[in-house]
Image (tube, rainbow, N blue to C red; front, side):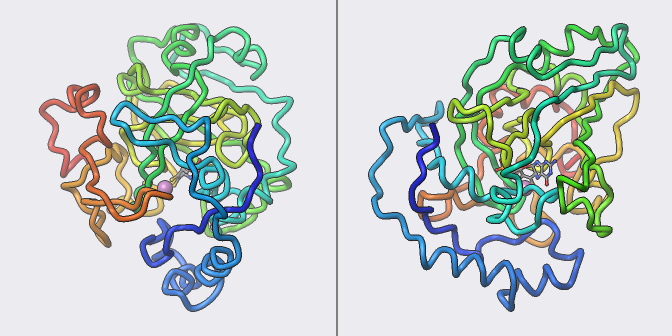
Length: 315
Ligand SMILES: Nc1nc2c(c(=O)[nH]1)N[C@H]1C(S)=C(S)[C@@H](COP(=O)(O)O)O[C@H]1N2
Ligand SMILES: [Mo]
């Protein structure tokens, strides 16, 4: 069970530059602290200081010894533009989002196109817990115990053709349930993509929950990609379609601002975002900034996928 207690103070909004800042002037003004989200962030923080800093009994750590982020932070500070660009408003707006029935269609360049009902997936593929770092391109990070299964196990079932080299992922399109999708400023539905070898990598998960909970709409809803060595925007939520493709698909952020959000989006402290440094990050709930690690600390496992590639060109 998720414990409900007072929310910890959010990180200082001055540390966070929203992904969409340049897009719209209102968002820019908010980020600059004039009105709206920036002010709200501060207001929420002021009223809801944590009453205790004691480590919860179930706290776990990743393989580098980083303790998992407090579940209240993970579930109350979200990027989920289908609901709102206000990070702290997602949980409330997503509260009644319907997660059943839910199907995931897998097609394109596969020998056996299939439509999976979520409960069949959950029953047929063993779920495991993986504690991964999540590094947002906005230079904040968390450590989250996900529940899920390797995407490769699902791909084995549909039998990709030899011509398949990329995957495209698509989020549910349902503006009645997702008010953010009524905004004409973005091209809905949210989409993402991976190279096939990245998708088959053992670290790449389809997450079905976190902290042992299956029903966290704001983070998963009910199936979400989790690629821990890439910036958070690659890890698309509420997946309803996966296509095997010959060419890289158009993706949400890359289409909006290709110079700022590359297709690869591998965490790389040496390649700055055009508007801010990626050399360090704020680990929520853990005080001061820390150095960002190459491939988010997963270089031993994934650097080989990019051997011979210029990571400044393929950012
Ligand atoms: N469908 C969808 N998936 C999404 C997003 C989104 O807006 N819509 N935001 C992305 C971004 S920018 C980040 S940092 C992570 C945040 O995940 P969290 O809210 O679970 O921390 O989700 C990613 N997946
Ligand atoms: Mo992000």
